[in-house]
Image (cartoon, rainbow, N blue to C red; front, side, top):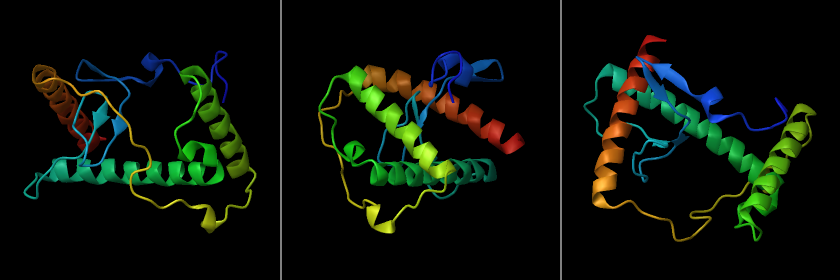
Length: 157
């Protein structure tokens, strides 16, 4: 939906405040990723408190729904399955247009064939920047605090 002339809300519109701390939007990752301020993942291990177990349950449910939605999006719009060979700005336009068209198809109950599903391992390979050890330590501490606050929030709401 277009709001205030944009399809993408401002970051502060997506942020929430928990115990006085602003929690900015974040991605949800599986255990293969490093926990960071902008990438949340579940708690590792098996002897977790009920609050942490519940947080993991809710986070993983959200991650699975997101994976299904993106899988269907990529199945319908094959250009998203591979690296887009265009400028970053144009790539954003490709993705937004694909999302809009996908939502139109979904709202109109357009047929989706199971053979469109794409099942593979690593879809994109690339050189992604890594943080140095000091940056990882600081980012990890911030992320741990964010996850702790989110755990409290989820267990009380």
